[in-house]
View 1 (cartoon, rainbow, N blue to C red):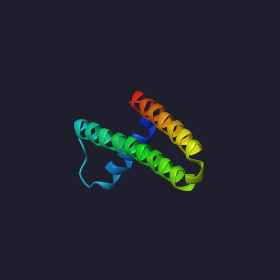
View 2 (view 1 turned 45 degrees about the vertical axis):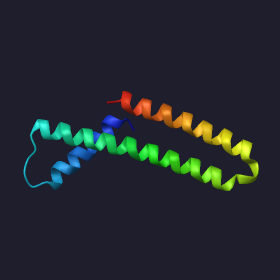
View 3 (view 1 turned 60 degrees about the horizontal axis):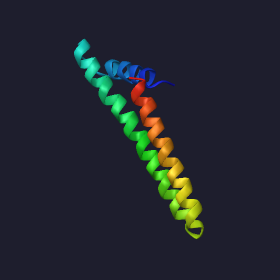
Length: 86
């Protein structure tokens, strides 16, 4: 699901939960907060994956480094794609 759709759905749910209507400016600011939260979450998950790989592949240090490097590259690509969807 594109970042814009996730953000729009979250903002719509937030607007429903808030008792007073939001202006267009407020909605845009909330959307940016939601988008940043999604990006931060993706980065955090990627970093946790690297930690797990390093922890469970200690005996295979070279393999662990290769997997960690690949995960970091994928994280960079993911963040770039998410930012591009704004």
